Length: 563
Image (cartoon, rainbow, N blue to C red; front, top):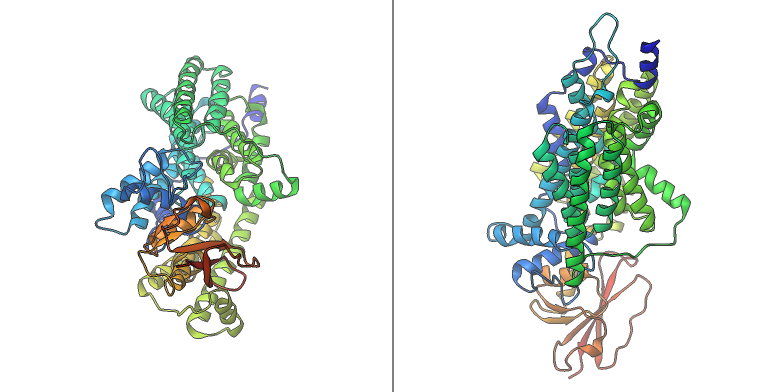
């Protein structure tokens, strides 16, 4: 009878064969194929990427105070102070020997790697708890605790790599990546508290302080609240005492946010969105968290008798914080980032109870979806260089007019290696049934890594031209010589940054042309939407209207001051 009750409480029935270790070289290859593409050989992309880079670059150049970042007089408005210090510091140190845009991306690539590592170690420590252990088998042969925890941790990392929402935002130089690191670090602190006393305490205090100084103090308070609840309801005496550390970390974070607010920096921000479309919210959550969310839901159901145990309560409450922040910020996908690492941890605990039919469905969906996506990318690449298929080549020319394809043998080599690795991975997975717990997440993670690698190698020049302001500034340069003073009263921070970074102009972006000295800048640029007519500001002569790509893309109207 006791065994039956335990079977109802613990759904994990894992043999020693099922905890086969994923080779470390393969795990490192997954991480490298995910983190490194997009780090090299591209411009800052609009909108959030180049806007954040502009704040960092202005600090490194000394154009703005380190206590008051701005581009052309326009402050970031959100994101705290720490992300811009981080990027600006790396630019100041590395830009003499490398491109400033690349220098700014280096710390954020390291942060993405840290998020992956923290998710792995969080799962490992939670899987070592007594409540998370699989059932002992009647005749022996059950999985050792350490091997079981390592297999689940491998699965959690693969689940995080496979999530679609992290793909683009995880490769940007934006404050959200630093905020994501803070929430992942907090979850690690709760997971490692009983075994890694000093590391866990440093992680808890540092994580909430990191969130408070990177523009997300409200999420820090929400995490502190759920952390206290998890600790106080725990059956472990050490975890109950650990709740005092969580309270202390929350007090420190609140104090830091208050100091930043009093200093008129990005601290507390209580603006809450009200317009929420339930249908759009559901669609966002489904695609953004795929495939971790369905597996996390399966975990919540299978382990429903252990919701209050730490291995379920910690990631579940952390994920709910991210979803609540997304709803409070009017379906903000950037707030939803906080839910991805905890959902990946929850997804890993579904693997011991995953039925063979569902596992096979995940495999075959991944094979078909990502193989078709890879073929489509190769087809576009072929059309760019050969003109066949003609319709695809025409579509590329329409989206990015004037683009001239050039072969990069290095990029082509990496793309071919990645495609070959995908074919070998599919063959390995479909050749025969593998017993390893993490097997069902290999193909989704590998497919996402493949598509990202192909996009950042084969199609990077096209994407760079389509998503960078460089082409627009090249057209502006035919009218305004580099180094000129430019007024851009309604321009976004991204466009202001582009004017400075690509055009080498001195820009002023405060609103209202009347605020500028009458004898100051000789050039005026007004950002326009696709169908917006050019205004006629008094005292200025219209020169030209330049578009980024096509008639329906963003454009600027250029004016010269009357003599």
